[in-house]
Length: 211
Image (cartoon, rainbow, N blue to C red; front, side, top):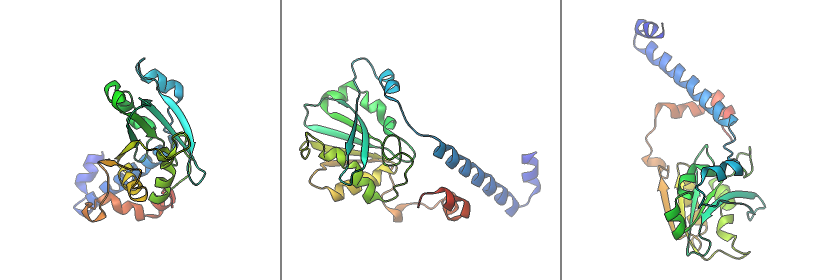
């Protein structure tokens, strides 16, 4: 019936119906995403990894007092830290395949964080500022026996994690040795504006999105 209705509506009507369905689908996605905690329990994590990979679960305190949750695998006595920062929505487990890579773990300490607002880091709290997110996540750069971490820190950011790791490199240049951005938005002028971007300006989406 929907197909027949679409064919009976000329030109602009089809576009209106398509936009309406797109808006509904986008709202449903946002609602479903907000209902998900993106938590992976310690028991689930241990079951996921192979027997020769032992995940270590930590909570450390950021400079502003916020508690940052992260999971690590790999060698402790190594020169390199590889720190993974997920996008939105998500959690530390977005990179669990990398944390479970035995060969990679032999060469580096692998760390995946829960970004502020997700998992065990300020759950349910919106932290829209990249500077604030960077400051909180930087706790993993500082937490080595209570002193500044002198290992080589390689930051890997996916999606929104991309601009966050770049911001971390800007704020803490002495602690960041390399940055890898995967499918991240880092240049607004290079971004292609798509039809659904305008939905963020609607009244419904303004109520759903964090300020």
